[in-house]
Image (cartoon, rainbow, N blue to C red):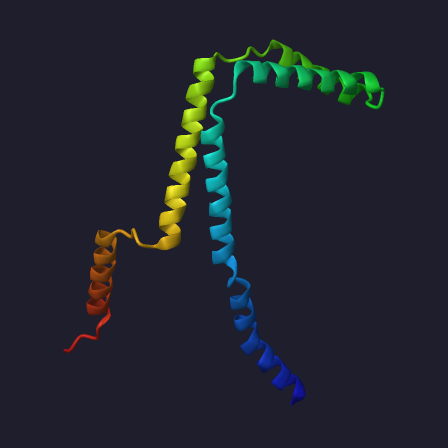
Length: 151
């Protein structure tokens, strides 16, 4: 009898415990949205990277790869991959400043669009009224269809 009571109480409590798990998701989502907004604002204020910055980054990456190659820690296969990475980096040409500007603008536009879509989803204010009406009509139609017929 005790086992049965324990089992029934567990079956009753499990849905409540799992519902509590999702309680904090809304606040967490708002925090992530705020952090994403900060990133977008910071990117807007900084502007696109300059060509000199990219050259400096490339030189730092090459220096890091050279350091790894000369360290002697890596065996044949790994060393071969690191050397291939270095060669690939050496062959890569830097984009023009116009291309960097376009890429920066495109990324900002995409980030803003994603934030706007998530914000609309979070607020649920911008639901499609036509879809609501269609769903209501569909539910009414199914109720009529499933209604017992008189004969």
